[in-house]
Image (cartoon, rainbow, N blue to C red; front, top):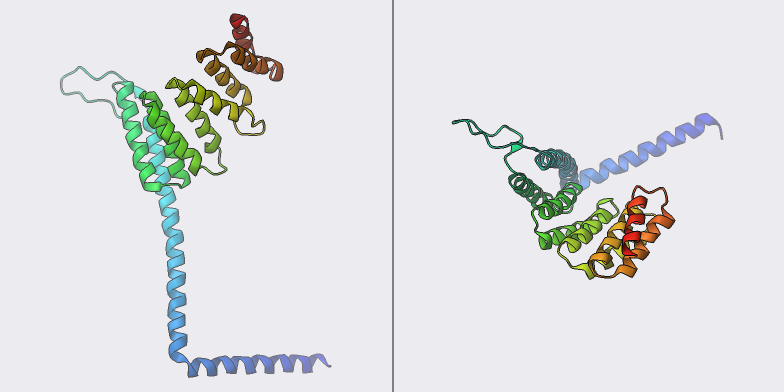
Length: 240
């Protein structure tokens, strides 16, 4: 078949198909109009959701940045000069700063749920609770963070935080269990030598010197270049 004839046939096929579509639209005009409106609404909704999501992420990031700034604020004594006010970005005591940071992170956590911003805020809630000595609340915050973190680094970090909260609350057996599980993840995000140090300290505080010595020895044997190796060797000598 000549190229010219093939081209003419394609044009005829296109014209025929176009004519059928036009005829179908004419015969079912109401249906096509409704479908077109639905498509337009769908496209607007999709675009609106994308815009809303972007705005929400940006707003969440800004709020999170402000909360982190509070967490790292300078402690400056309250002014004694009459009429003077606290310098912006400072707090008179650590307690005041930690309470303000906790409030900021709680607000973000409630608003952004299990999103990245919400998970990050919840992790820092746990830190704030720890600094305030509210270990049960810290444990709960870290557990929720770990549950929502998925494959992000906040998963193992929150599990480590939970172990720290258990240790601070003197729940030594639970802390030992938490650190033992984390120490088995050699390919995880956490430095295993650091986890082993906390495991050893938990064992020592629980009155389990043999288990403590074994954990310290793992640091020395498996991580000789670790910054914890010297301290681990010292603790082994003290344990006898």
